[in-house]
Amino acid sequence: MRIRIGLIFLMVLLAFGACNDTDCITTNTAYVNYAFYDQQGRLISFQQPITVTAAGTDSVLINQQTEMNTMKLPLCYTSVEDTFVVHYSETMVDSIFVTHQNIPHFISMDCGMGMYHHIDAVRSTNYAIDSVQISNSEVTYDAKEHIRIYYTNNN
Image (cartoon, rainbow, N blue to C red; front, side, top):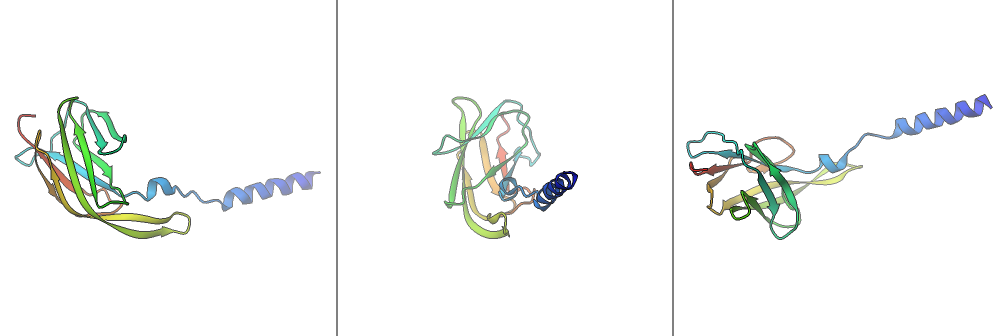
């Protein structure tokens, strides 16, 4: 009986030891990193709550976040332009339009393919946003700033 229990215990240990700790969901999404600046080029932070949604969907990407000076948002790998709506209040919104190329890349046998992006252009509406600028067009898994959002001084 002890031998059977020992063998079962050994098989369980080997089974758990053979599993790897791959988290494909979180490791294969490349995010665009945005940073907020004033017109003089200084990093700014929003104290009021901001919500960001993906246009044309019911997806809330950022919900009532305060003290934001950066944000990171995913790009859609099935289209070449994404529209994000930044809600400052119920009536005050800006839209950010990101045109991009999707570049598939192999991650691993367990995770399959992932998607990098190349940002071709970015534009926005101008309710509170003064202008937008691409600071790094290659979107991979790094934490580099990709897009700068310049706000008018009266925010």
